[in-house]
Amino acid sequence: MTPWSATVLTLFPEMFPGPLGLSLSGKALATGLWSLETVNIRDFAVDKHNTVDDTPFGGGPGMVMRPDVVDAALASVEDRPGPVLYLSPRGPVLDQALSAELAAGDGVTLLCGRYEGIDQRVLDKRNIREVSLGDFVLSGGELAAMALLDASLRLLPGYMGAEASLDEESFSSGLLEYPHFTRPASWDGLDVPAVLLSGHHENIRAWRLEQAERITRDRRPDLWARYCGQEGGGDEIAKGAMSAR
Ligand code: 4FN
Image (cartoon, rainbow, N blue to C red; front, side, top):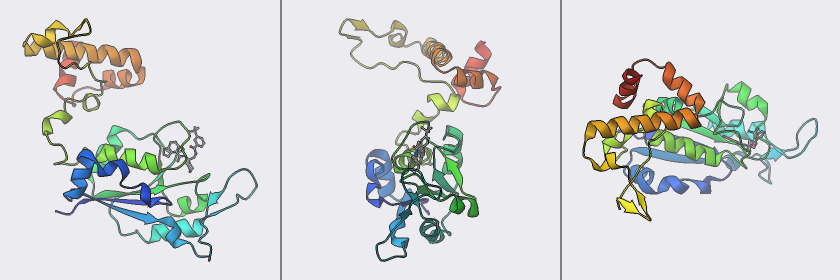
C-alpha cells in the first residue's frame, strides 16, 4: 500500500517530524501508513549567501520571503499528490471537514511561512489555498502544519489502535465532549455521578448526551447552532439527540 503523503516546505526542516514522530502518529510513520518529506526552502536559494528573504517594497517592518526561491521549492514537489496549502492567518480556519477531506485523499503539501510571510505573486501564480489554525500570532507556519497533519492523520484508515474511539467523539456528532471520569469512584471527597456506576447503558447514554448538549449550548453557541441545524447524518449520539428534542 502506498502511504498517505505529507510534503512540508519550510526553512526549518529540523522541526519535523517533531511531535508527529511520537505516539500513534510516530508508529504510523514507522509502519508506512503515511510518509513525510521535508523540503528545505533554503536549498533553492540562488545567491552565494543563500538568501531567502528581502525587504518589503513600500517599506515597513520585517522581511518577506523571496518569490523566486519559494517558487523553485514548490516546482520541486509539483508531482506530489493532493493540494498545496499555505498555512496563513488569512485563510479560513481549519475544521474537521477539511481534515477529513484531506485524509480521504492521497496526501497534502504544506507551505510554511516565516518573517512577515511570502511574496504575494507566488501564491497568486500557483493559486495556492490558505488555511489558518486560528486568530493568534505565530512565528511561522510549522506548528500550524503539524496540527493540521495530526488532525488528518488520526482519520487515516488503520491509524487508531482501537477503531471504536473515533465515532463517539464530540466532533463526529458536532457536540463537545461530555465529562469523563475514571477510578477511584470517590476521590478527594468528590464522587463520580452515580449513573455512570449503574451499569444501565441506556441511562448512561442519555446522561452523556444531555451533558454534551448543555456544555455545547453554554460554551460554543456557534457549534450549537450548527448542530441544531443538521438533520439526519452523524452518529448514534447525534441521532439520539435529534429525536430527543
Ligand atoms: N503567522 C494575525 C494578523 C497578522 C499576522 C499574523 C501572524 C508566521 C509568516 C504569517 C498565524 C496564526 C495562525 C499559520 C496574525 C498561522 C499563522 C496560523 C502564521 C510567519 C507569516 C505568520 C490577526 C491572526 C493575530 C505571522 C492575527 N495558522 N503572522 O501570525 O503563519 O497557520
